[in-house]
Length: 219
Length: 219
Image (cartoon, rainbow over all chains, first blue to last red; front, top):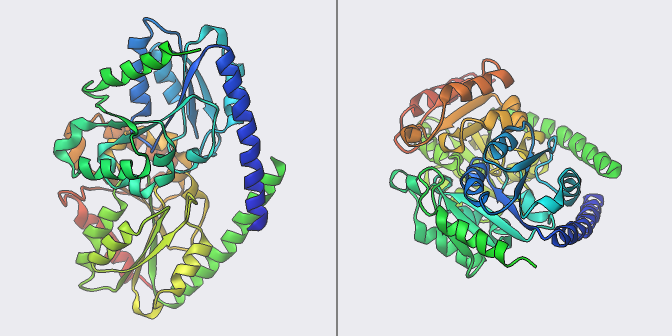
C-alpha cells in the first residue's frame, strides 16, 4: 500500500502543477471557468441547458463534458447553444488537469467568456483533483436525501457554490432542508447556496445573476 | 502513467485473490451474500430498512456498511434489526476485498444466513473491485434519469440484479422507462429487474421473494 500512496501523491502533485498552468491560460484569455460536480443524475447537464440559452445573448460559452462513456451530454450542451467538447475518461472516475489541458487545446480560447467543465458524476474522486477552474460548483438534488453533506464531507468542504436542485420534488420525498443546511454549514460555513429547479425554472435567476456578476468581475 | 497502470493491475490481482478467500469463508459458513451498489442517495439503505424487518422473522441478517464518513447507515441497519458493522473507507471511493475480510472478522459468521454489503455510493469505482459476494445488486432510482445505463456501462454490465427504486416519483419527473430498459438490455441482456418504491412499499415483495429463493438455494 505504501507504493500506492507514493504513486497517488506523485499524481496529485503533478496534477496541481498542471492545474496552475490551466488557470494561467484561462486568465490570459479572460475566461471565467467553473468545475461543475455532482452525483450521477443530480442535474449538472440540465443546469447547463437552463443556463446557456439565457447567458448566450451576452456571453460566448464553451462546455467541456467529462464522461465515462457516450457524448450524450455534449450533444445536449451543443443543442443549448454552447461550443462543446467531450472527454471520455474511459473508466476514470473524475477529470484531471491533463484532461482539461487537452480539451483547452481543442477550443479557441480567444472566443470564450465562460467555460463550464462538467465533471464525471461522482461525489468522491473529483474532489481530489484540481482542474485550474475559478470556482467549484456542486449540484446536490433533493431526492438524494438530506444526509449527503455528512456522508461526502470532502466534496462539500471543497466547493465555492452549492446548487440544491429538484426543489419541485420537495412535496414528494423526505428531505429536511434545515438538517441538510446544518450539514452544509458545519463543513463549509457561509457557502453560497442556490435552491432551484431545472424542471420548473424556479430559482434559476438567482444562480444566473451570480454567474453574470462573476463574468462581469473578470480581469 | 505506466507505473500507475502497473500498480493498479497489481492491486486488482491481489483484490481478486482475497475476494476468492472471502467467498470460501462465506460458503463454508452457509451464508448468502450480496454487494449492494448505487449512486449516492438512490436508496441502498432504504432498501435494507424495507427488507431486513420482513426477512428477520426467518433469517439471521448482518449488514456491512461502507462509507467515506459517519456511521449513519449502520445505525439505520441496526435499527431495522440486523447485526451491523461499519467500515469507514477514509476517502476511498469503493470497498475492496481487504475491507470485507476485516469486517468478516468482526462478525460471528456461524450466526448469519444473509450478509448484505452496502458499498460506497458511486457508480464507477465499486464496479472494478470484487468482494467475494454471491450477487451484485445495483439500485438505480427514477430521479437519476433514464440515461444512466448508457453513461455508466461498466456498472450496469457487471451486476446480477437491478432494482429501479423511487417509482412513486415517475409522475413528477421525466423518466422514459422503455429507454432506460433498452439501455439495460443492451448492456446486460435478461438482467433480473425489480421496479419498486422503498417509500410506498410497492414492488418490494417481488424483490424479497427473489432474495428468499436465493437463501433457500444455499449449499
